[in-house]
Length: 208
Image (tube, rainbow, N blue to C red; front, side, top):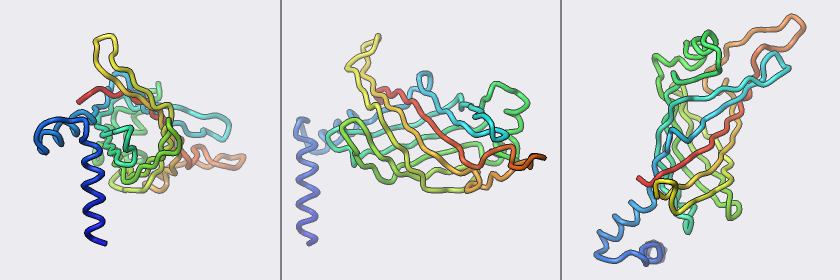
């Protein structure tokens, strides 16, 4: 069983490196470099939405994001994703509300400045969609989250001649699972802020 596993690993590696010339070390380096992408924060949007007083959805964004994606469309299950979001960059177009969101009632940005996501498992659901399971860490609490990734796209060169990739991802989380439980009870019943939060990421990637 062990020997079969080793042979399988080498067969997979050789197949992946078949298009790269040179020594094994050089081929591995070029393979890893070719398939490593940086998040282009200028053209990436990390957004969220939450129901407010049970009648409408208030939406916001995080204006800063950084991270890397290692992706090979021939082996999507080997995808690796790491994302870092400074929570103090939250914006809902209301300075007073944004200040409250940065406080200990919500993100507690002073003590926990970063929200991070690290993928742990990736599964292709069709040629242009992935199911990405990973660990989302917020306020020092880590929970497993599943992202639905669609609209996988690529261009060989943008207006500057640089290759790009892009995708959109959605997920739903409960803020209470990360210790964010602040709320107000409405006189007519119900609460001011829903527990369930929808996430949407529209990501642009450039070659690392």
